[in-house]
Image 1 (cartoon, rainbow, N blue to C red):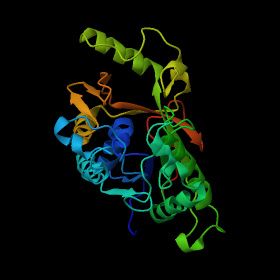
Image 2 (image 1 turned 60 degrees about the vertical axis):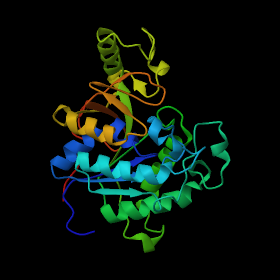
Image 3 (image 1 turned 135 degrees about the horizontal axis):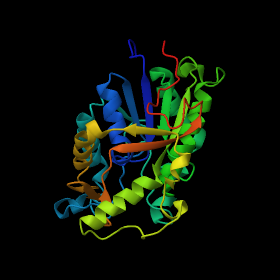
Image 4 (image 1 turned 90 degrees about the vertical axis):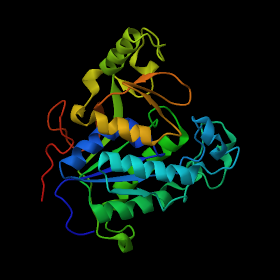
Length: 295
């Protein structure tokens, strides 16, 4: 790939829709600002639970046709965010959705959970060396909430960041490239508290208890630990539209959304990150590229 913009962002996610929920406003902001935004999705999300009744036939326990359908949903979501470079790890269908932990889908030999980390990382190394991102975004070691594919995406992304910089690893995949900064997705505790207040004011049932410690809700951390805060207020509508595009998985209702469990969740446009590698340029940063020397 030639003539790339000066700023280049790579995001690694497990399934279609993860990117819009976690990073939709961030992706829309940087795409609008002219950065090159690349999304790599590791599976087609074949094991997802289907929300609309008229699409229930797509589910894994019926026609098992959800994966190809979600390719189209992801493409539509990326159009809403202005992201033109989105790919599947190893190509569409190379790795199958592993399902939730402890389900039979975990045992399929073609599922992402069972893939060799170095084998899967090699596909991502090729992308890193082609796009040459300064910033990489993925999950924390627990995958946010413990989903096998999220954990595996973390492992593969971190391993690929190492291997892409190693001149002795697969020179056929391109020249070595070191990623300057790696961030993990997180949610600030204050954001959850504010969201719960909005739910109460709207008369909605709460998905979380009235009081909690940071570890009680997956992915939530104390505000003091947050390294970067991206204000995507200007891109809230784009994020909501991207989430609507994932219609089999997400139901958006004004300022709230729900997954298949039907629990209301506030739709937020301010997104939070923890820096895992590289140096933070202040705390919190308001730009993932802060401190990165542009060519």
